[in-house]
Structures are given as structure tokens and as C-alpha cells.
Length: 96
Image 1 (cartoon, rainbow, N blue to C red):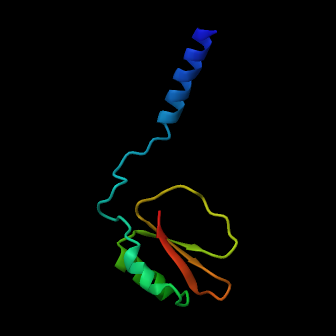
Image 2: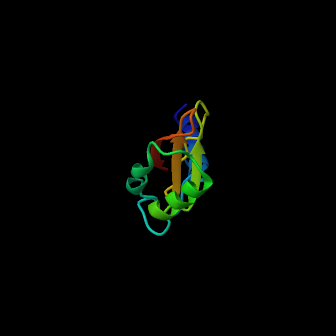
Image 3: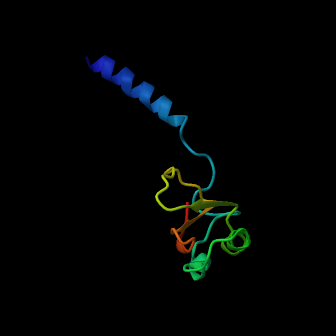
């Protein structure tokens, strides 16, 4: 029984190693900084505003978060998330 458990644990460790990220998740080039984006909470969503948010936050990728829309929970250090309400007004800006 112990041998079977050891083999199962070893196989799990190998499988999880394939999911590991390589790269700097703490920051660096392309890292998102949400603080500058907070000034845009309450403003109407536009493509131009999205471009401006990318420039100001240092993010490389922008993800819009429409109301009631499920989103993946994966974390990306270079992604800016902009959530808005039914009136297309920004209500939250986060990184990840």
C-alpha cells in the first residue's frame, strides 16, 4: 500500500511540474500596476480609454470584464483587467 501511494505521489509531482510557470511573476518589463488606472473608475468604456490604460499601467494585455461574465482565474503579471457595469462605466481596475 505504501509503495502504491509513493508512486501516485511521484506521478502527481511530475504532472504538476508541467503546470509550473517560468518567468518573473513579481514584476519586470510589462508588469501591470493598477494604481494609475484607479483614476478611470467611473468613466465610460472606450477603445481609446483602453489604450490609455495600457500605457499608464505598463500592462501588455487588456481584458475587459463585462457585467455577469465569467472569467478565468489564471494570473498574468502583464494583464490589466477593467470591469464595467451595464451602463458601460468602469467600476474596477485590477491587475492579473
